[in-house]
Image (cartoon, rainbow, N blue to C red):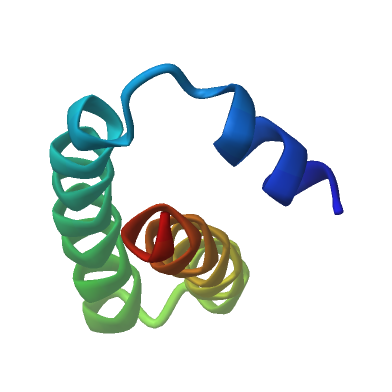
Amino acid sequence: MEDVIRAYKCRDPEERIPVLRLELDYELALLYEAMRSQNYIQKQKCLQRLWELRRELLMLEEL
């Protein structure tokens, strides 16, 4: 519910979407490095953050 409220408060979703895409790319790069180094904790953090970014992006694209 907090995500929905935050999405509606965002004045211009078109400004936030490109930033989210950059954040997704960065987090994917971090995930790749975590997987290469077999860092399970970092991998889980990246996956959680990717899930959150994905959810926010989907909400903004629906607006």
